Image 1: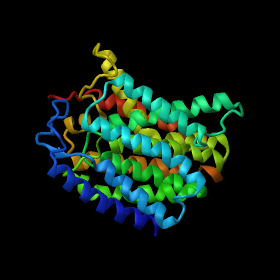
Image 2: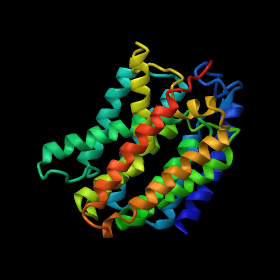
Image 3: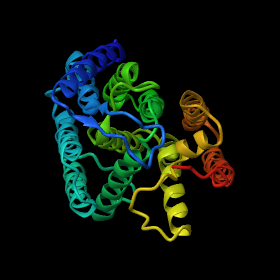
Image 4: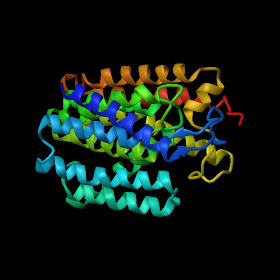
Length: 321
């Protein structure tokens, strides 16, 4: 039922956000980096996703629970930062500084994981992971429906094996599906930075929660599995831009989803292929808590091998602006 609450809240919130954005001209203008983006599309879809998460937490009855509030406060900060960036784009460095401060706040409020047993090291690793995932999800969001579907799969897997975080994980997954009604190709609303920063934070915290429920090595492998497409996107972008002598932090049409479309796949086929791959990876990862000790390492090696093979194929397909 919490999934349904998130779904209904996400769908209603996204519809309201789209109506508001179109009424006040809050739209994403055509982007030369994305050849398929040829007309203005409403922004603020991330607010609709947040409404779905809020509805799920209200249904669960844990919104005022101390452990939930400690996670919700930084989430609200990332959402607000994204809204500001959508309305008036911020420069990269100030945005990174604010993200790091919000990640530090999250770690201080208990969002971090016990990874080494050394408090300051655990806090630093947790902060770095949150900042990495926030930006990785943000740069992946260039294809209608892609990120919302990937986030749904990753969050569903974490919720299945981390009972203490099941409500928020599954509620947010439901909100993403509600948002997908309007964001599926061709999208009538984008999640914008508001949505990508919120989802990046949520996925980071969700994967950190895995270390509370299962041993470190399986938890690490499962965290990599849930975040795999976003980490792959980040690595592909950086390597592609460096090879072209471009600043790695600047925009370019080297995203894996755009390369897949340059190879001849439609937006829908790009989404479905990516979702199915992540679904298979997460299904395998969900078995790790009860698997043999070598299984997590096998999954990590398999992720690396598949990622390398996919990168070799994608690098042959340049995007023509």
